Image 1 (cartoon, rainbow, N blue to C red):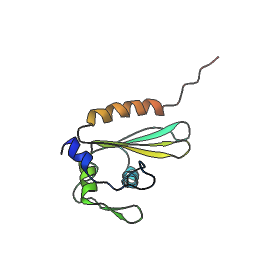
Image 2: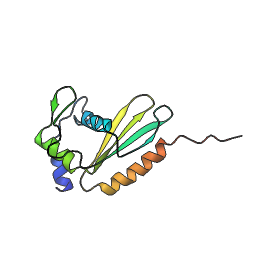
Image 3: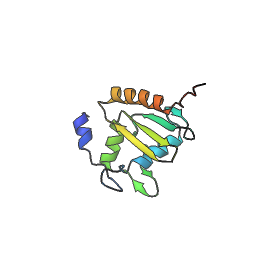
Image 4: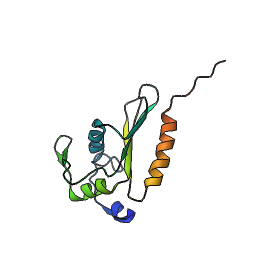
Length: 126
């Protein structure tokens, strides 16, 4: 699947326009099995988890959250994703950044920056 085809998939949104898509809770459930990598600590700065794709394989469960069921487009979105970065800050705000099939390098680059941001600042002795 090309990046353009992936971008054209219909993924349901919830909340305000421009808000998270309905797959954010699916990403949270994937984190319950452990991220591929994680960094930081929500108590001090930021916690981040990396999920490498594909994020859906034939035979995976299609129900998540309270009662959501994945559509065919959402399955294709997850199956063809390079991955996702999930972050939670010290105030409890969680966000998910999704990366398409042609964005593996961007995922790796953004993950490196996220890891840097999640590291606690070193205290300077005076």
